[in-house]
Image (cartoon, rainbow, N blue to C red):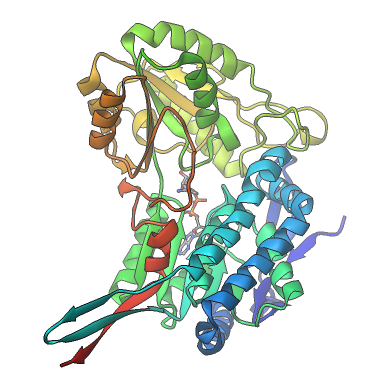
Length: 481
Ligand code: TXE
């Protein structure tokens, strides 16, 4: 079987990596190598950054209307190949094809269309006084970097790239080396659409080589990163002394706070999704379930029954609710976290192990939906991000106890609060230390809203005007009287 060669897209064309460095890329559902991805080195990254810098003067002078039309063309190009993109995303990451098709690839299309619209509505402030008239300009940075992870590969890459292009920057984007395929296809879409060369470059390769070289490059003015907290800290350590603009969207250990007066059936169905969608590999998944004591037993028996019935299987099968996790090391990391929880005294209410999926997927990396109970708030399973289909359940007595448990975390990305008592919902939402709070729902994403974490879940906000502000530099011009 010949392997797919995934090259970087630099200056409008696909190029061989300097020094011929390649990495194996696996299909998580089968455990087999199916492609090879370029491991771009400093020279390749430099070519991409130079291409972006060369393209910048012309691109930044295009009108918002013209940039908006380009973004729509990229959206059209993805949309026209929706099935192909969904199958590629699934093959690369292990997620069910239906999930990529219904949710993630359409969202990548929406990312381009949303920021295409926002590009048209930009305005800038002026401040008049007897001493003079101040006019604020918001100008793009130049060549900028996007570094994105493997859990929602095209969705998160386009979430960064679209506003960067809309505001007139030229981008070097580095997808995760674990999931490079749909980024390569985005390069094909750019080429087919005739996007001016150098405006969007996609460099493939590992974090420690390609990613590091990109962050260090002196011509890169701004870096937007989504990934693990440890990697975020490393990137901040590199970028901060070079005075680059930085946005970091990092890990989470999100609380899901369930009061006894909630709408039970809706809460149960949503909590199943928020626990296990994409095998629990979404930074917004609720991994710590906190339930009011009077509802605890009813919730546990209903939740465990449903979780135990979720089908883990071939991502190509439309009946599979969970597919494979992204890599063998990641599967081992999840299983090690479960073993640690057991050592800490956890009761495994369901799952707790790898799943063997027979046939084509017999060597794939699957993990059963796992529910753990009986753990104190300070133990590793309640403190450290597992990023797999694993949740813990703890009981609470009242609002203050719920808040204390919810906030007992170094992370603060998102939370979910279930109650029909709206004053309580608001009180809890105001005190819970997360950047995003959903009341009686989960993953409702209005792209105009600010998105990002508190504490070690990151700094900076994405979404809507926050993203447009991040990718531009405000400058003041004063007409003195
Ligand atoms: O992600 P990394 P990893 C969490 C999750 C997971 C853990 C580690 O808990 O288990 O992080 O995952 C690039 N300079 N999340 O190690 O390393 C890398 O190539 C520049 C949460 O797989 O953070 C990839 O493109 N770039 C999360 C991107 O960073 C570097 C999503 C993310 O990879 C680099 C993913 C470097 N020195 C993991 N090192 C979320 N918040 O959604 C790596 N990269």
